[in-house]
Image (tube, rainbow, N blue to C red; front, side, top):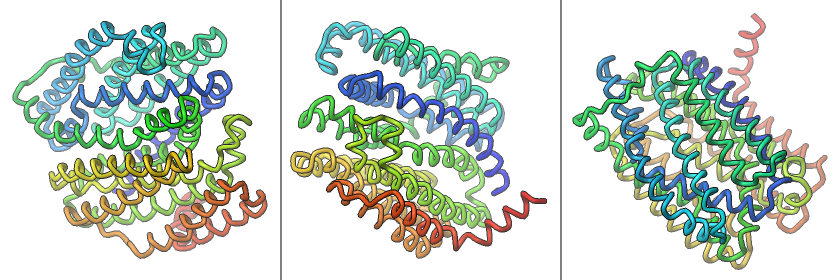
Length: 472
């Protein structure tokens, strides 16, 4: 299984990493062209469109993912066609409603009724991207990694190029951002469907639809709660500090998304194999080893980015945002901990998804309460602290609950040691940065090298074997 996982990780990983890195390079463009208020507005609009999409589509893609692997060819056609029909039928009434109230939505979101068409465009691009992501989900679980990579590259390259032309040269502002996303999603759909129309026929089997909804509907609550837990702080920041502060936090958050991107690539490659092969105990042991390897590799990436946070933020966003670089280490770490927790899918395998909903409800309550207490006193630092406390708690719960439902052999002691040596210094870096006392780059690089040595030493055997394979 490890070889198949690494093969898919290479294809999914390289293609997704390349296109996302290009998208990552849009941050310096947007940070220098869009105002902090515009960046904050973009973040709030994206939050609203995503939550609306979750309610609308009822996490259908997760049900398709769960049942596809165990179905035969005829059943797979019914599953895919039913899911696609659900997406297409659901979005039409939403777009009509948004068109009718677009001016009111614009007034609520950005304080101007003149931006109604921009809000409608944002919802349209979000719906198109949702359909594209659904087709990509089918590609992943069909293990069609080459088709997945080609469609992803087409989508993101088009999005980036069109967005730059519209935002930088045509001066279209946020309308240019969302129109670029819409054109990119359309290009991705064209490439994804090319030569595969029969595989994505729009047809609905009502018996199959009920079975899929029975699985996915409870996950909708979890998905909404998870997203609100991640983004409700934006609304609290707006209420306490204003829209520009939302933009500042959003820029730092987007720069810190690299470990989240890496974890998404890993989970996208690993989860299809877990769903197919988890019942084989030998494969479960391999999965446990992969969990330990992913933990160490993720901490290594986080450590280097955290200790170089002033330079990273300055290079990516410029002087305007560099004074807020102290937020970067803890936002970075929070994102990694949360995304690592997604790998523990024992509750899904054991059909105990209701516990996930309770977990994210508790997380949402914790974020709201902690931000209410810390945000007025510590500003954006209070939001970062709220995030790390919540995501740390979620990872602990997910680990124990998942392992109880379905056990993957994991070296917990090794994970705790590596985590302690990496995370505690990063928390110190956040504290020193907040008080403008972060040490110079020489000392920070030295700390990063020491951390790397600690993380890589237990893996020296596997690294040597990998190096010998490359040489041969």
